[in-house]
Image (cartoon, rainbow, N blue to C red; front, side):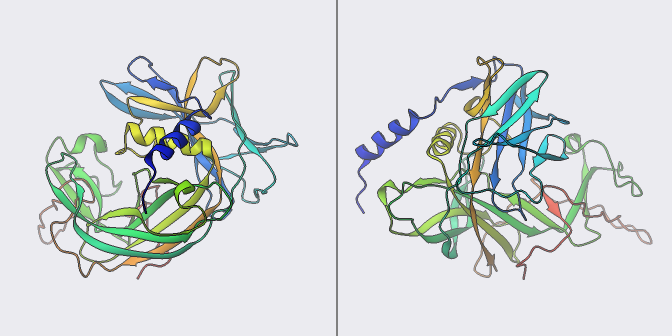
Length: 372
């Protein structure tokens, strides 16, 4: 298919007019408010809405959660407000019985130190289902972080039928589940077996360290970081085939499970992610805000001059899982813990202690549904 690039350029200019793409220079701002999350119609697996500050210390970005807020979801037409529930510091979820309606508009509201914040209203768009999902091993799929080497990956593709007679904007996310062999890393001789603790994690790699095996089953939960968006302007109502939705690193020779999410987002959300993508494709989210972070749809009504980073949206999510057996994989494996594994030497009759798999946002002791 021949792409009309001039038409696509005008399309982006039209979308950018819908949202003012201010930027925030963290070098000039000691602290920037960052809000991120989707309100979805999946009451079993709701998205987290995070509210936090971003600070820049010696060029390094640090995120600081803002706990004990009382954010609400406002139903715009009725004015009714639904209180969100804080399940972790600065992380909020809707009540278990809350359900989105197609004909309603919703906004996020909260107050910090007397400053009142609210997002622009958004409504849900029904997302078409994923009709097919498949993968192919590519030995030269990705560049290493230093840009000097080609790394292998299992590339995941999907097919789906675009909804006809509608302007649709898509966002794809994926979650990778990997069986972990090691559950704890600690500086040499600093491991407390009874407490399963050691010196702070950010310090252990600056001195000799050991990795400790898992006492029970443990699965890494790794969310894709690349921004992956698409406008249907060039494929209106047609079957979209072979959309690349993830490059899965080769961590282990045995299999892994990948869950892909397909989401229809608003034109304004598409614009936000498009600008964020152009700034820093490697980040893909707001956990590591790029140097000039993008302002989205959250405003400070008390002080309109404050620029708030992030976007709050409404979404219907379609999911599909794929098991990757990795039988065809070859080549060097990636470092799932970010460093070379070094186990504490065995010294009979004692042995290196094992560590429990503790449930968190990045790992779980429970076997994911669909694991083989």
